[in-house]
Length: 610
Image (cartoon, rainbow, N blue to C red; front, side, top):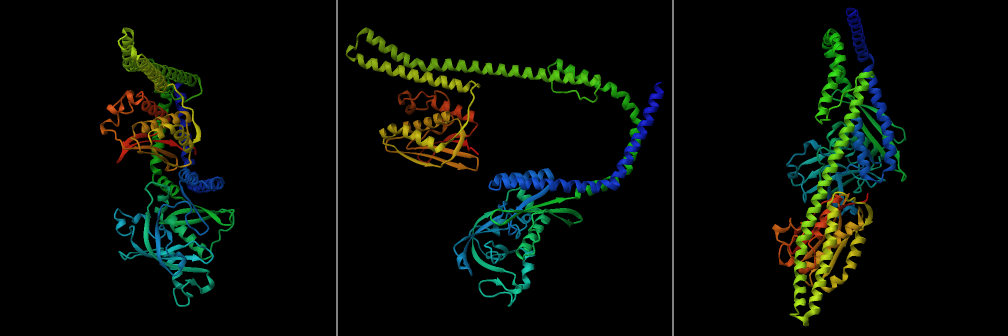
């Protein structure tokens, strides 16, 4: 009986492996390459139409468009970019120089600043660490442009650096317009090319470099610049646009073949009509090299595949005999680890029979136990943190209440003994002041304990940070006028996403500190400014006082007082900065303090409401 089953399995395995081998060979030889090409082209066509719709929804959001380009490139293994009506890169603007024009036949350009793209003049692969020796700021240069008569867009043709004599050229475009560099090709100083009525003009300028921008490595734009074929096709497209040879004015997607170094590519061009009458082009390039490499590899190693399959047939019987025992061994190993509270391993479910059901149930049990144990550990950690907070709270209150209670005890003893009955009101006022300080201290300690407990949830809202700062300054105007301080503000109207009550508490603490430690007739500078595109930086700087460098990292600690100027007599509880620190930590933002030339600056960041 066993021999019969083994024999049948052997015959079945042989026939199945032979059939699979034959299907692989036939499919690879006849169908796979064309299937791959059609599949990839159709997928890119579909994704380009999706990209077009997403672009039309987000055309005013540069960041969203760049994200769309990056996602498309990653998902389709293809390069993509957007071109404007004149064939220039539309949203990839990180490889250029800005030149202040000092001389030109076109008087309207003199003393203006032109942005000159470099991607058709200089190969980005040729840029080295000493590139600034050849092109640097304040260097003088001459540049030749070509432009359509009806357009203000100038396309650079030739760039000459006067200090080094180096010349950078758009060779394809220069070759195209060189036949018109003769006496009949120009009319006068205006630079219009007359021959064949091309409707083009040449513009010469001289100027000084103001800014140089080179793209960073490992970015999508850098990948575009380094792909010679892609840049060549973009340049060809721009030249056809300049010479009115562009055939892509219709809204249909055009697919063109391209080849370089024996590698085949597909070029996709999708025009998009803009509301202002101009046209934006989706420009994508996909390589078909992977399929050629895969097919060649299969052909070269087909003999090894045959040998491997024959060897596989011999081992198939042994494989099936062990296949039944394998899941049971895995179940045993996994349950042993579960008994030791190790839930890192799951049993692979390879069948839909009773063994498969058992494996699935053990996996569910492992996941449930792991989840409950993790939750229990989290609860224990929270309880430990709460207990630690309680102990610190009691220790802090005991320490801080010792001084006011001692003062009150002394006052009561004096009043009780009648030693200074004529100063009774003075001692009552002293005790009332200490009671108020204790009340404020307890409120701040409770606030700090709540923030440090790990259970406080920070609810976020959107609000204008400049309005909040103005409100706080108005609220503190009495203290400011009382010390004759000069408040200088530089506030940007920016909407942030944060907890308004807590951020008001932070800003109030920082400004109150600044008022407290700023000498009379000095200045406090408050500013809010946008950094990058997602953050806002708020700064409060007080003039006329410094914090010792060794104390800068300690001022965020509760009850920390570094010197005599920061004693209880100043009116603080020593908890304001500790509370502010916890609020900013719960917001997950950066903050800090440092000494300036003539003062101290506190700063923190908030996220913009995008």
